[in-house]
Image (tube, rainbow, N blue to C red; front, top):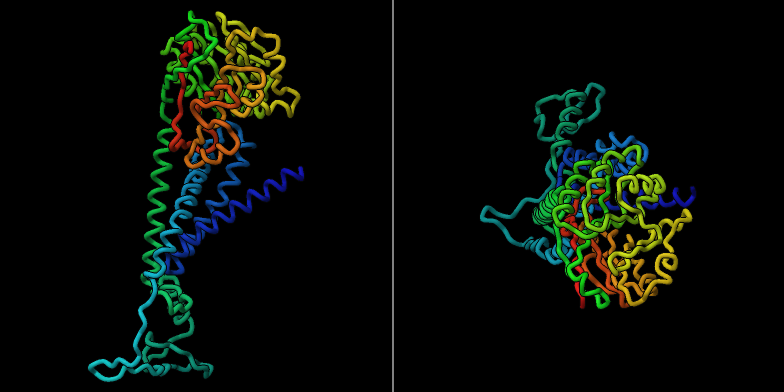
Length: 446
């Protein structure tokens, strides 16, 4: 509990820091009136509160009610991220343009054609209230007009909301140019960020791309050349992706006439009671040699044992640290590494030891990082997901710090590893620069 509490505190501090920076660049640098800044500040505060409320709501609300918070909360999370990235990148041109905002020096010795400029203080206009106290009414009332204290307060309050805020005097910079620069950069960041989130939302909700990927295996029997594995991962059934999402994936897979269907984890974000109907269309998958599944990390957050039984009941065989023979090819599957926390982790020895080393072996494993262990057991090809291809560029750069292959085909310690970007999304319903896909792996003899 202490660790969770500390984690939440760190998350809240990060969220606060990001929103303070957004307030500075999108409110303080843009609005010059008290009213504008008050409204802008209120909006930023409410959006900052929305994020932790959404994260908590996704845990405690019933599945049917979660979209009420998930759509606005996760979309703002994505927009917040892109505003942060674009504004941070725009700090460089801001710094480069700072000399442009500097004032030109004023020559006080210059006189106008009408004579020297009178810079002496103007006399203060005053009137006396009923108690004999002097009240400064400036130009608002005139020297001969008496103003009631209440009326004067209303005038001052009304003007203070609409009039520009007094800024600290900075003789080095021109306020009008500084304001123009701040507004221009804020508008640029807003347009780019909204565009990225809009395109990413469209991509996330679109049908997964069908990718055909030829891969050569030296040990593959000549009779198996052209063997097709339809690979899908990270379907992420949940509050924003339901039964229609599964039905569309099944239609796409059935259209390729695959020999094997492989689902490599993260099928669901919820319990069987909540999402069982959404997963039912998997029973309609068609292939020559069968459909297979291995657990991902999200199954262990969603009641993994119930889901193993449910997936098996749909005619999709769950490979749990085991292998089987398919026409001279060994197809193996191991549990996700997250299962180690509950005594259900991967066991490469159980899945791969004692096999005929002259036969090619294709391993299904949710996370690409598992390839390091797979290579030690002589795996020829590992098929994985988990990364979403980064889901939102430039997150792919961060994912690459942990995953040896972020998307596509790579090599890890001599083992070929192919990583699909996945068919769904997690968190923000946004996939920018990493559209969803279903991959058709075509095996050929090297």
